[in-house]
Length: 103
Image (cartoon, rainbow, N blue to C red; front, side, top):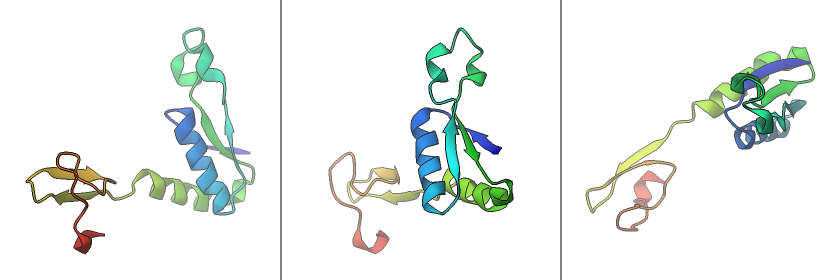
């Protein structure tokens, strides 16, 4: 087994592991429940970890994790003048949908 990375929280760890498994890697979350003992143990030792079973899958699994962690985010200006960033498809200010030329 090989540890790929620490995750900032259990939700992100579960998403990363699910994406790895969907891509065919044998991934799992370790330290799933240690968040409840942060304070008794150092917080950096209580973060969930993403592991793979087969060491030979490391290169591909790390490449997928890097792609997941660095996904490009859209940035567009709504007709109301508001700048909308991230994965939003609707202006938070006025409610207009993203222009069809940006979808």
